[in-house]
Length: 79
Image (cartoon, rainbow, N blue to C red; front, side, top):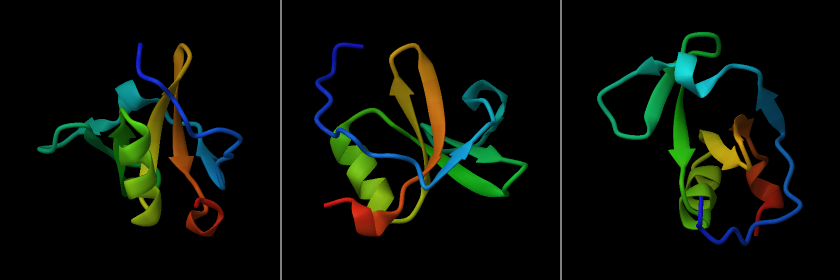
């Protein structure tokens, strides 16, 4: 991935152990449904998408190096 990542030193308030590829595919691009937590998970390709979804208190998936990590961030900690 060649995108420039500018968000640093953020930690998940909750980190999900589910795998993106195992989530249920739904009708929205880059959104899947987790049967375990019964929530939509939004894949974030850019920092802007990540910040927007954090502020909307959504579960997110991000690509970190060679793995996709999922969970949610505490919105009050992101500026």
